[in-house]
Amino acid sequence: MLSIMLTKLVASLQRTRVAGRLAQSDPARSTKERWTTIRTGLMAMLLVLFWGHAGVATAGKPELDPSYVDGKIYYMIGPKIIVNAIVTQPQLYAKAEELYLLVYPINPSGTDTDPKTLPSGYQPNCDPCYHPGVPGIFAYHDHVLTGAPGLGKDGTAGGMKAPWKIILLVYNPAVALSPTFTPITSASDIDAAEEAGVFLQINPGAENPYEIETGNVLICPLVSPDA
Image (cartoon, rainbow, N blue to C red; front, side, top):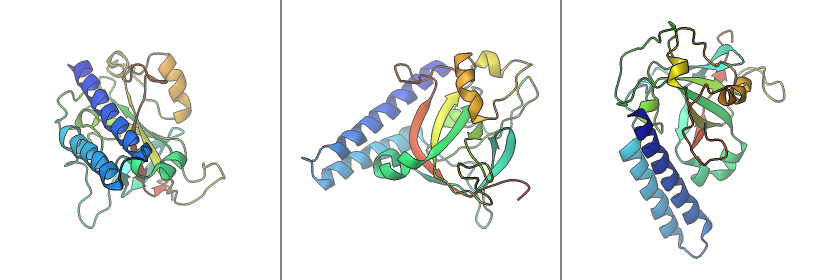
């Protein structure tokens, strides 16, 4: 059932993004027509695939999302998502760093709300988080980022607000549900883990079949628990 759902989600994502790119690249079409195509694709994506009623910050209290960076936990504060930024804000998307959502295949209905513990005793960072712009079946996941305060390309310090492009990976159930499972906590380990079969091939035919670029961007401060 999980594989069928993933196939449908991937196909819908690809159709929506292709339609948006065609609308953007065709100069013969009017601005109104281009935006109609983009809005239609976004509405279909939001209504059919994406819903975010849980994991949303309450009024007056910023949302804190734990995230791994080089094996250490940092926190995203009050993250703001820009859905389909790959089309609507391509320049922002082009400079965005990678934020990997490493998904646990334990929510095939996409509706579970109870905290879950894997056979190894590990509990996901998001247990669960229904982020806007992310299909519900991916709600149980870890965040793994490529940088953090003090670890940026130029030795950044303090808060780090870099735009993050959201990339999905799904753990192989045989790995994630093993009693000896150890989570990936560093972006530098992802490539080797893909080659070792730690993740499922959820994007057949793509340059990297293990990953799906959602086309969405996250904007948020990122701080260390020691900050």
